[in-house]
Length: 320
Image 1: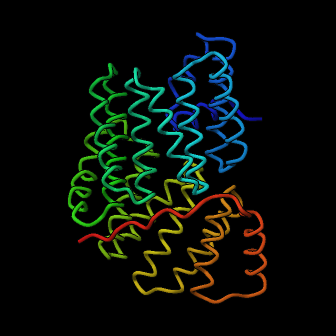
Image 2 (image 1 turned 135 degrees about the vertical axis):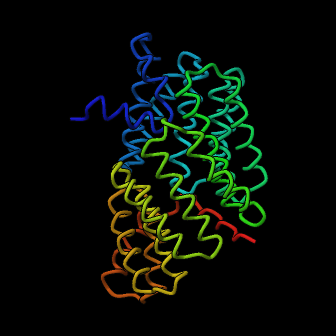
């Protein structure tokens, strides 16, 4: 039995708290859309992407039935997260563009849509556009009337998104990324929670990877892994393990890299991300060769992926 507290916690992770907390003031399709988005957030946090997509799509339909622009934008942004996990960045980008159109008169939702599009553009290698979107999303926080703690949390989230785009852009952006990451703790203040701390640790790890420092990368990514395990977020755990493998490879520790990848593949096979699982398995083959058991696992994953559209994210650039 899924507890409502669990659903609320997952919804807050996806930025749906305001929608869900107003549940008692609405009824009919709007209430059903709110509940569907919250249930979808819960399934997404568990790595059940197909279930999450069904709930988010249902929420979108309810919002469309009453021409609720804010509800439609919220559902579209959530669906874009599912698309991105499936490496269907084209559809994810189209959904964020539509969410932006619907959120023209809502600065909070518009900021969320810009932040979401910044992440997607970054994964597509459109770094200048991604950084511009992240900066615009950050500026929109000033237009909101929020309690001090809520403002600090949202500002922290937006700065973290900016750091994400800078880290992935690499090159001359790494110095600014370092400065931004150094300021995050002060921005969040007491609103810094485990999810935010994990995101910052992961970004510090990826920045170290971009600088060619495998030891620092491994230290930060191990901290992110610890926090994401504590949060019970398998998608993030798998990403941490894959990045730790890259850090070990950078240090020349092939055995440790293989160990991290084996764990990553095991996690990926328990959640609804067959493309990432296949990529992790293929990395393993490059490191250690193949055997009948691993080939069998990869064959199943290839069947699961099938002809569905999707390409891996563009690799992050190294620092200069």
